[in-house]
Image (cartoon, rainbow, N blue to C red; front, side, top):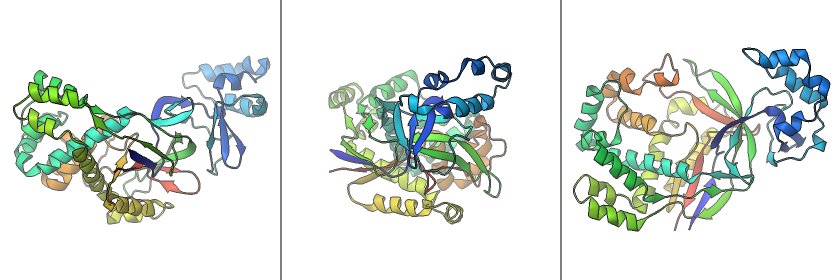
Length: 379
């Protein structure tokens, strides 16, 4: 059995943005969430037929400003039944906020980290670890794919083995990945955090407010088995795929390999947040440098793994970029615009020296956090 502990706020979005009037503060540390239809039902008919409101909502660039003003004026939340409550200690006034709230994945109002999120994080760490472990041997493959490909997405198989991913190999990976099993991880409480993207300007002074986010707050714990394997399917694969590179990958599908891979990956990615520039940058945020130091200490504890999960925390394109930037800075710089620049994400002036530069910071008014870190203690 493994013990899972939330180290910093975790947000796994449902994709739904909830209107701010659905949240109403009931005391100094608690907000209730309500259905938007229930909130609207409290508005009198004269409001719902107000021509100014209808014009505002039907314009090409609709605004909810007037609607929210009417809600604040007329709605009596004490007459509504809340869906659930969240902790809220941020000093911003919810009644004046215009941002929507990004909804956390939950079931029967219990927040959870989906097994698919954990599985994706584990596989990303596993790929990174195998590439790092074999970097000197596969360097020719890396040069071939990066310098030979035309704005092509970097592919794990081609980087690892120097061959394009054909249908047979694609089917193999589907079968292999299906052998890794991860369950949803449930917790009890949620908290509302304010999220901003910091460090966006050339001098890292920019701040872009994004939204409020429902989160699983720090210090919650739960016990379960983080990952296990379908041994029957793995044995079938061993009989079906006996030659390299198949058998090499099958043999690496072991719990101890994945746990080792996770910490190797997390340690490397943390280095980007603990160099001198970012140490100075984080000094203006309450608690972040201390959190990073604590996480680094956790990584040195026996039978302990630290992962980072959630939106924009890790994905293959970002992490393989980091690996190549550290091991082949000349190649990274030469091919930055072709392969590594985040122009597809709308960035117009990315810099190969500082990318990725901006950081998402969550705040509850008392402390600031780099989101998404969880600790796993195993036997």
